[in-house]
Length: 110
Image (tube, rainbow, N blue to C red; front, side):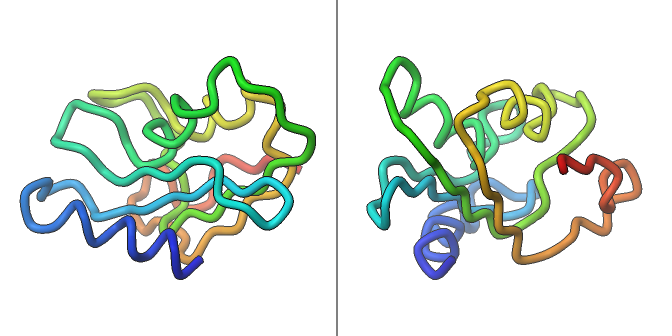
């Protein structure tokens, strides 16, 4: 999670008003992708990291993200749905539940 936090700092201050979010994807204790919030309307941290693993084979991926993935379509598609559709992310660790009413724990993948 510390690596995800370090990624989130890369979004400051240029990418405000979006929250500064960081994400890392790990395969067998090795970071294989990382991302952070881009300018409004561009990739969120999770999508930034997911695009880096497209077309690559992995067995059991884990994701650390500093803020709950968004679950609604705004200027960008829902990150929670993109993670679910990837089918290679088996565990997700989230630092904070997003207080934004359109998220706030509404999308649960069990």
